[in-house]
Amino acid sequence: TDRACASFKRSVMPSYKLTYFDIRGKAEFIRIILAQAGVEYEDIRIRQDKWAELKPKVPFSHIPVLSVDGTEVCGSINIARFIAERHGLAGDNDLQNAEIGSIIDFAVDIGKCCEKVMKETDEAKKKADGAELSEKTLPNMLKTLENFVRSNFTTNGFAYGSKLTWADIGVYLLVDNLSEYFEFKISADTFPCLAKLHSTVANQPNIKKWIECRPKTVF
Image (cartoon, rainbow, N blue to C red; front, side):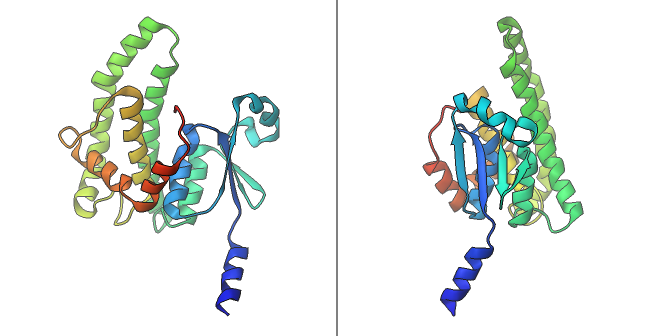
């Protein structure tokens, strides 16, 4: 009977295939959520020279794309939300999910400010914009994020609610990226809640294992 039950559980589990380039990029948020949820999936990594061939075949001509039993879901944040809500890393109702989404949206806004500087081709402007980003934009936006999560973090140890959600993972990845790509360090002295939150997520066993074992890429 146990064997039959195990076979049935495997048969009803969805089949996930995540397609993206062989980099962390926009898919890494999804991969970390999948890792924390303990969900098996096929991690399909394509070479840049194969993108032109694949591009017309995927919805909206964008990746990442998540195939769920053959149905393709697009948009990195949309996919992340879908996985989080399906596998216990979201809120308990639609209002909680909306509040969690507010944290994610603000983290994305911070990322867009950084991306704009990274894509600037005029070196003089890039240097000036980078200085403003590090000295003004990031400190102000991170202070807003720190203040937003502080009351809940002080009580429960998470960005929102009493359990780890994809909001915590989003903040973790933001802190990681700021450190790696902009040498902008978030410490217990500058943003204590964000720093502690990063540590909490980094030490989740499933996430820690993924970070240690994932393919090594430049970015």
